[in-house]
Length: 226
Image (cartoon, rainbow, N blue to C red; front, side):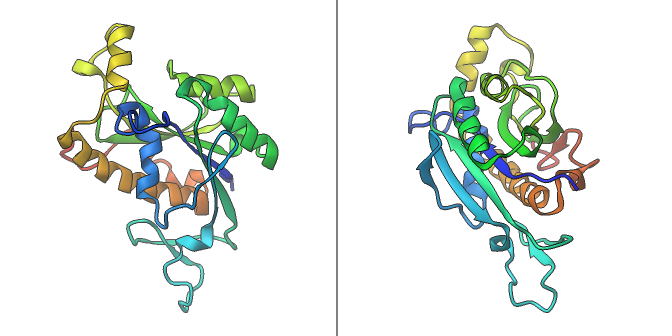
């Protein structure tokens, strides 16, 4: 079984950016239950999470049943360990410096890293897991690739769509990703984040392959979101 040891939530630090579309990865932190206890480390906010903390029934008769963010029971094989969470406090285009610092310190190979990021090629309301692949022009992914020397990390792609629903000039894209989600979009995003948090817990406990084929391709949350 493949394992995920380091989860990276991409975005830009600071209040002026926190509601931006480009911060979709970082916004996932708000849906994690229990909430990680963050501390300043590795040029970012870092937390080590005991996966047993996701168990909402520690004294249950069946100790091998864990409960994900939405309360659904999840079985795993073996004793869960720990996972490292990281929100780089560098700006997006320097994210790799933070990721490499954490990965090198804990000796975590690229294939055991999962990066959560915004995705222009998926409309709002969709998300997908992916193993390796291209960088799609994403500055955060490009920086991680440069600093790790590989793009073979896992991704959780959270759709933000493109302005107008189609390809535009770079200036339009830059303004788009650095603009805030609207009130209506935030309502959709909240449900997407809850679903993604549940899937992330499953990836950590049961391995990322357990999400396929359901999460390999685009999936809509909720069905009428787009």
